[in-house]
Structure formats: structure tokens, C-alpha cells
Amino acid sequence: MDRDDLVAWLDAFLDIHAYPDPSLNGLQVEGAAEVTKVALAVDASLRTFEQAAELGADMVIVHHGLFWGPARAVVGPLRRRLAFLLERDISLYAAHIPLDAHREVGNNWGLARILRLEELESFGEFQGMPIGCKGRFAEPVELHDLADRIEKALGESVLVHAGGPMQVRSLGIVSGAAAWEAVTAADQGLDAFLTGEPKHDVFHEVFERGMNALYAGHYMTETVGVNLLGERLHSQFGLATEFVLLPTGL
Image (cartoon, rainbow, N blue to C red):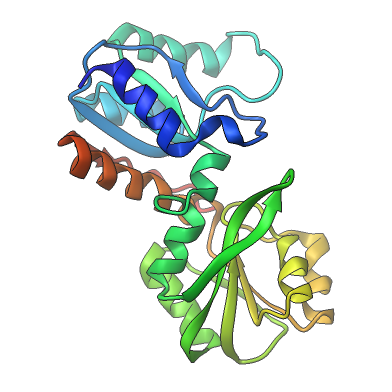
């Protein structure tokens, strides 16, 4: 597939320009003009790129790209990562907040469907734009059974701060580092909130507000979107896709 056609489709499908985001969403490194295989990953690390090259990928699509905010000097790890891609003619495409929020292939709506939530609605915001998802279970789920369900789906141990009801009927989800959205969940009367990583100054807020918080790892909660996007690329364009799993444990 032509690289520029694929990039144009990704830009439009993920609506990358709709979101205020410190990440430089879109094509970050231009590689070969023709794309026959895409590797998908969470992080733009050198090891990610090495594995992508071993898989024969012409493009890498990541959730966490190389460029954030102000310009950086191209030295040290950044230089080595860029050199690796350029020397092998591999493109790099990044989608941060757009891949959290997307209703079809996003981390949050995807997680909600994996957990079999119903009556899905937007939940939480990032700079005024909807980012997360909330819903209800057809039947109440015991809190620790829900944690087990998340562990089986993502492959990461789940930390549970059990400050609310043991029977969970409603759940809000924002992947990654969104611990403070537990307060939003409490304000909206939800029984539980799921995100990636805990935050010290939210600990007492959760218990004092009668909220359950579940933390399933920043990395693992953000594997969902890139995997769903890979499936969409394969089904729509027949592209070979492969996910590069490099968990951080965080």
C-alpha cells in the first residue's frame, strides 16, 4: 500500500487533528514509499524498532511516539532511534490521545467491550475533549471477579483499592495515567473506575468518596488500541500486521 495513502487514511480515521495533545500525532518519520507490513506497539523504543525490523515491517505505529512538546536535540537515545529507522527506511506513525478516545479502535471503548460493558457513553475529558468510556454490566460483578476478568484480558496483575461497593454495576475507564478521573467517576455515581497506574495523592480520595479504583498497568491498558487498529488495517487493506509486546510492568 502506498505510504502516503495509508497516512492520509490514518489521519482521517483517527481524526488526529481534533485533539489538543502534546504528542506530535501523525507521521513522525518518513520511510519507504510502499508499506507491505505494519508493526504496532505502545512505545517508540529502540527495542520496538529492532523487533519491527526483524518482523520485516515497513511502518511502525505506536501510541507513545518520539516527539512531545518543544523541540529536542537529536542526541543520545533519540539519535539512535531515529538513525535506526532512517537507515532501514522504516516509517513511524504515532497516535496518542486520538487512540485513547476513538470509539471503534480506542483503548477505552475497546476495553469497555472486552469487559462486556453495555450502555456505553463517553466519560472523562482531556482538555475539553471526551477521552474515556463508561458503561454498565448486564448483571452486577463482584469487585475481585472484575479484577480477575481484567487480568485475564490484559495479562497484568490488577491493583484494587476497594473503597466502594463489592458488587460493581457501573464502571468508568480511562487508560494510562488518569488516576484523578476516579474523582469524576465518584461524582457521576459510578461504582468503580479503571485506569493504568495509581497516584499517591488519589489514594485517600478514592476511599473517602466510596469509590473502587482498579489499576491494570499504564502499558497493558494501552495495548488495546494498537491491537484493534492492526486488526482494522488487516481487514480493510489486507496489510500484514503484527503487535510488538514489550511490557514495562508499569
